[in-house]
Image (cartoon, rainbow, N blue to C red; front, side, top):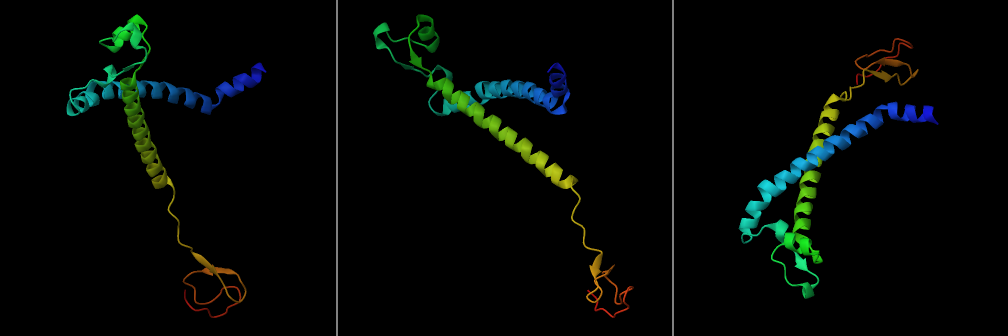
Length: 149
């Protein structure tokens, strides 16, 4: 079992996956910083000077109405933090769009690397079915006259 595990770990796919997870986590942090620090403040200004991360709904009014989400958490008041959800949803959309662009670019590069289809250089003689050059007017095998392609 140890030998199988070592073979599994040594495969390139596992290492590639590990690298992808680490890069994905770092990319997620960059996108989160982009959304929270650059995109959401102007959007909040446009919709009425709102900081989305501070939007919440108090579920238990008996403990008083907290002034902020941090105060509600400190007092243990149950809230629905829908502002955080909005930020996370925007983060997801940006990450999904960025990954879409990366995959689209990689696919475009792969298509360019693939050899373009080549035109046929030979055809079959209609009489003896031997392969002859496309431009041939006579079959080298049966010597039949053949119309040019």
